[in-house]
Image (tube, rainbow, N blue to C red; front, side):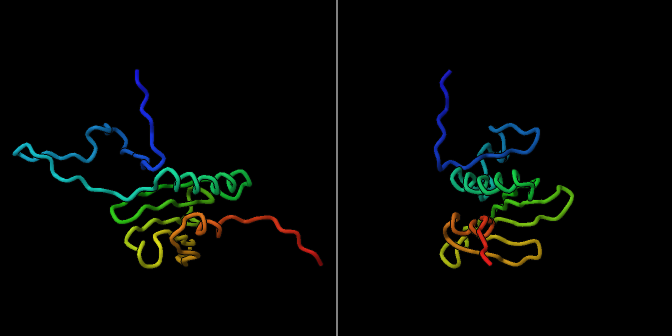
Amino acid sequence: MKEALLSELEPIQLFPAGSLPGSAGQIYSNVGMKTKKAVSTTFDRKEFFEILKIYGRNVSSGDWRDYAIDMQRDRAVFSIFRRASETPLYRIEKNPKLACKQGMYSIISATGLILKRGHDLKKVLRVLDRKIRLVKY
């Protein structure tokens, strides 16, 4: 069997439980023509890899424990939780409508404060990356 090669820029597809990948989002009318399926905003592989690098570091240090991904038509959100039963500590949002203005990536705290916004995801994620520094008295 031939293996499918995945591109680095191909978005990760998530499907609802119980649905088949071939039938997700395709609706047929009475005439037999396909209607447009709702396109959602997603994180591509490089973006997802950068987010998971920081998430993995903080999980191993014991600061974070759970996450959730929400892909809507106008934005994609990666929520970070301390515990699964709480509200998210941080939300990493990708909003393509802001790409030409303030930058499509933003980090939002639990209180709704935008900590950082920009065009480059690596630079925006530096807010969450705490490094140990030597303090001299």
